[in-house]
Structures are given as C-alpha cells and as structure tokens.
Length: 113
Image 1 (cartoon, one colour):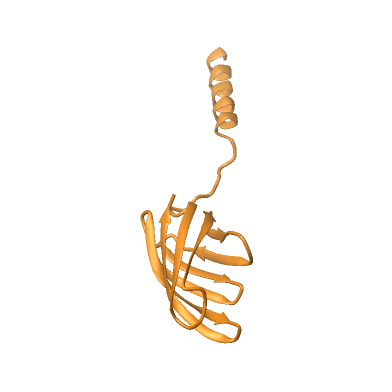
Image 2 (cartoon, rainbow, N blue to C red):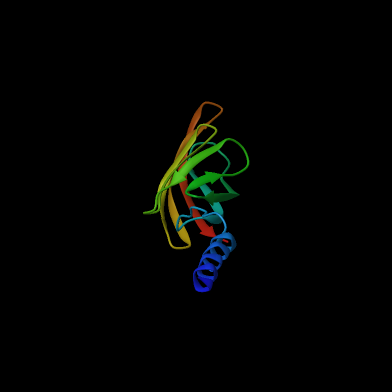
C-alpha cells in the first residue's frame, strides 16, 4: 500500500511540474526580415522584426500569416502579400503589393535571432 501511495504521489508531482503543454513549430521564435523592392516606387529596402508562435506570424501593424511545419510562408501585411520558404534559421521569398496605387514587388530574406 505504501508503494502505491509513493507511486501515485510521484506521478501527480511529475504532472504538476511539467505544466501545460505548449504547441510549438520548428520555426517559432523571433525573425529579422529584410525586404528589398525590385519593381515599383515602394521603399527601396526595409527591415522588420516578426515573431512566430505556434506557426502564426505577428508583428507591428496588421500582420496576418502562418508558417507550416514544412516551412512554407504565407503572410499579408496591410495589402502586401508575401510567400516563400524557411529552412532551419533562414528563409527567403517574394512579395507584392502597392504604394499609393502603384504596384510594387520584390524579395525578402529572413534570419532567426
């Protein structure tokens, strides 16, 4: 009987110490994204920090997007759409949008901090 109580106590203690499970994806973390305009009159280059948590992308402004377990990126930020691929701690892709009604497009590169 004493061994059962000790086993039960150990099991409960381990469960409490483990805490709630947090879903994670291989790409969760803080990313530094560099954007370069190739066509159009948008800002020639810029840099943004974005956070990935459980595959969802967030940052300053109206950022919406996600990154799949395979690293496929799909993000929109205030009428600008980006897609690409992450692999490990880096990635790249293309983006397109408009500035003052004039179409712009370019490339992006990202590195995990």
